[in-house]
Image 1: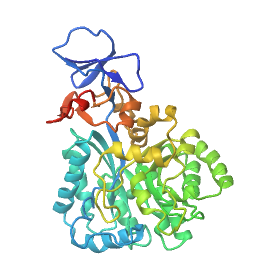
Image 2 (image 1 turned 135 degrees about the vertical axis):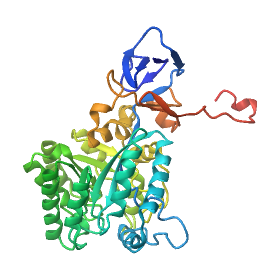
Image 3 (image 1 turned 30 degrees about the vertical axis):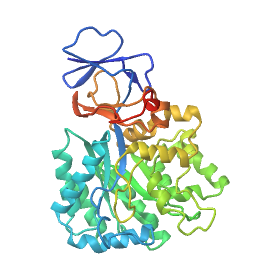
Image 4 (image 1 turned 180 degrees about the vertical axis):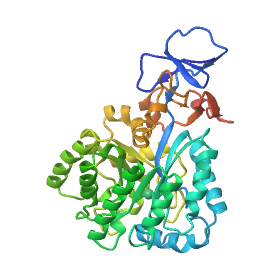
Length: 417
Ligand SMILES: [Zn+2]
């Protein structure tokens, strides 16, 4: 039995001790009595692990190396470059890249990742590699796989059969990219078929939806309507929806009512889309985020995600969810003190809701003892200081633990910091 004392638990200000037994949280409270091992957290902030609910592990780090940079910085050039490159893809290469990406994220406190895996590939190379990794790494990280038709459900010949095959192989969700199909009608029909496939295989839905700056892009409306009819909104996520930031307020207000009804989820990728969107603008330039603040106020579930790390779409990224959160709350104006105090939800609980892992997620008695410790004493300080993750615990055991940074040499003036 292990006891963690002097903890500041996010969302539970009255309890300061955590008792862990047999890999689970046994009790959360105060004065919890004896334990085999007592760990003093010195008042530091304890959170459930970070969740990254939208990441592309099959082409992570593909943008590294000479000649691999996306020159225009657009989504469309990224898709073209990947399409050319993936013809020579092997399971070993996907595994190697994905492993490196997962290591990056886990080393920064992530324990739950939803990854989109391109199924517009006759060999389903990425899906095969990631299904193996999902099983192999489950004691370290919970991976969910979305069967994602990167080159279009209709635009890529045979994508429908390949998606069905991926779902039979055990993908956790069905994906789509309606704004990349060759017409509005094709986009609508792709959504219809993807929703039907998801229901047939009893999996979640996660669509790359309206990832553009076109105020007339309407696939979010269509997706929302389809899942409302099927009562499938809670199992459905609209990723990106950047165009929704450009629509008229009167239209947005109408849609807000419909989103409330469907309970559809949203994912915003702040750094990725700040990079990709607004490329056709002069000034003012659009920020690339959907209406995060308003959707949250509307009662819809919204999470932030990394999306890409050094691939054909985005040259930066390192799996640090604090960086994503910091960018996201700035770009979304989610910076009132009350908002900052609950902003960690965007990279923890809200992502867990999207992945529907609630039963195993959260610092509560009876759940697996998964948590992280930050080098700060409350949520506001942690976000303002972009605090580092000092420890990540999974099933009661450390994935890592590190000492707070110390200076090797410093002048007296800096000693109190
Ligand atoms: Zn994506």
